[in-house]
Length: 342
Image (cartoon, rainbow, N blue to C red):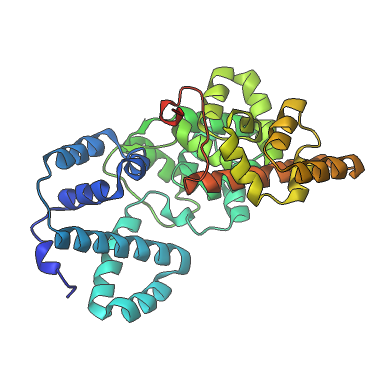
């Protein structure tokens, strides 16, 4: 039995969840909230609001349990049951490992379309490409954003835009709708997953996250067509994600920070097709010596492929996103009052 375990049974599951949310802080907690349904948010907020005094032991034990569950979930999805069992038994003992595996197994088994989680992208694509865009959108909404991006960027172009639109406009999906899709997939998969509650799926935030993982060339193609098909939806998605052109909205200190970690070759290639305003943003926020070197290399770089330019821009964007996650740069978006500098 874990140390301080005696302090935790006094807390219900909801109280433990509230304690974790409070311990994470408002910024990180807000990231969790966007994945919850309205009912769950209401219940969790209620528990947070009525939370009284807690002891250090209660907090530490609850966070330890939460960490172990997260660790177990990751090991089971990444390495499989046998791998997770071996590692957990060595770390926490046979009894604790069994308890963790049982709890996480129940969670994974209850998630619709969980059999897609470790599927080969090419195999999944071959199975999904003949489905209706609405069906593809529903299934992608249950995937991790990286996996969904791989499927989306390889879909035939005629289905990509309808699928993106279906994901973005998806809100709450009933168990009946999920059952219909599952029924269609019975012929191809043996496992039938059920869901008891409506779930928040897709939406603008999810599509933006998926688009953030798509290569820049396909990203441009999708937005070029979406700008024509549904310009308002295209604008909404863009407002939720960060693209190379958004560097123009960043403050000087943030630009200086990401340039410090940039590969100079990426800067040279990325600026080959950039407008003068973008070039000045870079040149004004790097040392005089570096600016002179980049300008010289740009003049000497000829016959650069557009693909190389786009890949360099994407690497810079990925670096900025990584630094933002660490809180080292600020990405400003229209109407984002939280990022106003004072």
